[in-house]
Image 1 (cartoon, rainbow, N blue to C red):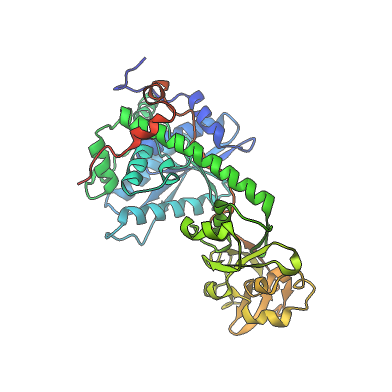
Image 2: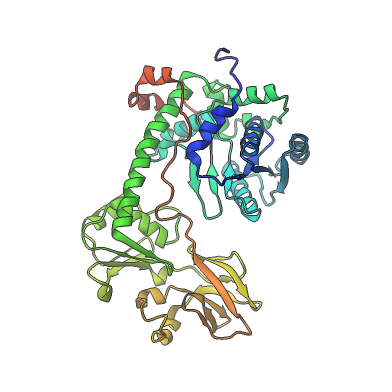
Length: 455
């Protein structure tokens, strides 16, 4: 048995146990893996490849090159060559438009994740694996604690996150990075060292240096992972309760509105509904939502209106605020309008058509059979295709006024965050029992208090 200074490689059975709570998977699972060429993502590529092959599946490594360092292109190509030598298919993604300046770390992360999600979706791969590990989780918890995050934020990164394109999976959140390097050494696999990981200009790199625990096996790092797991469990229970509330009380419709039964509402459930129907990534603050949830009434919050359901019953209509919808966008496959509706495809779509709100044109369509069941407030906020000032089509009403400009189109309700998706997942058999023995199941949370000061 190796000591903490010489970690053991991660065995195939251990990795399988880490993947188990992140399913379900297809009988022959196909996975995308984000690979930077560094030790962590390279180890994940090897582990995921072995896991998928054992189940008759396959892996595609997505190698992202930010182009921020002169040598990054050569390193990315070398990574693809190393993976190919192991029989792992890869695709090189070259990111453009990233310039040095403020918030470069965050901008690069967002650009990388967007490129990875898009590439995985393009290949028809539902699962995208990322290589965040226990030390990354510990740093995330510490940084969020230092910035004053609440309990949900202090749960750290989720092991499973549903996005409109793919399922993001982080199976290594409980694995110290030292074990990933040991896995590569045991496999005889080389990796790339990125000097930016030690750049003191980056906040995460400063925290990493202050932590002085490269292997991620120190007691403080492990305690942060315990704390994140405990808070993650609480967050999961809260999200399940929210989903249950919504299932019992809310009906969500493909036209982008909901009906809510009468009576007080759970604040978290109402906030989730407002977030999703408003096409936003984040909900209004609890300070705004809680009083409204306690006594529902006509109101506008977060770009969403709450109205009496009228002929639909004694409850409440929750619909996008017409005055808050976004401007029209160029109509092409994949275009997203108002953060809520995605144009999936269109036949015979003329150049110059735009996707926007039906708006005042709804009044003339009120008597159409497909429009009669819809409240007027909903009709105005439906997506429509326009050519200049001319209404071309309203796909949700199956209305195509000018076949030469558009014969058929499919527009789907696709908000950035589902009203109730997969609950928060901490991922994995979590950590050594001795840490729980030291801190206790709940007492471990105290160990996640800020333990370093950043200059």
